[in-house]
Image (tube, rainbow, N blue to C red; front, side, top):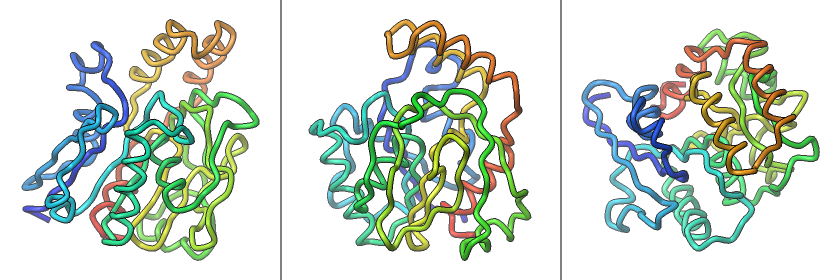
Length: 245
């Protein structure tokens, strides 16, 4: 796989804590996904930084990160990101969307997205994997029927376009994962997060008044209930992004 190029489309601003401890969210994703001989670049799309038109096709795959913004919003950079994702679809580039990235990827394909009717989902959530036609995606990795993952979201994908397929769900969220063709996949949870990152994020959300004390307390308790299977999620993401499934 040597020589391949990948890009992280960073949709959030790094906190000082994550920058210092992990090298920012770009560092978190590189730590999870990068392998020897690959080139990884980052584009701060939330600041309006996008790959040049001439360079878009040079990347073998793209990762879209989480964000504090709403994927159903119409900020200039979000609209530009949607246009880029439509271009990547036409080029059949591998695209992996995480949390906000999952939602905005769905939106670019024609999905309906918005606020979750069940409110915030913060903690470790048990995701149920589909036994449908995408079972080959999981069978090659010998995945279990359920898989815990760290979550931190209040928006969700409500409804997918006809050509997309739900490949995982949870009691809190009906579309935890989807696949579109063989080149695009969204994951509502955060395979890249450690519990440390999530606990720090809970504090940030509380400080910025995104959540109230009661939600923060419940979220911290839920963090301790389950262990996310980070190794299996890592395998899923790497094998999808690099065409090994």
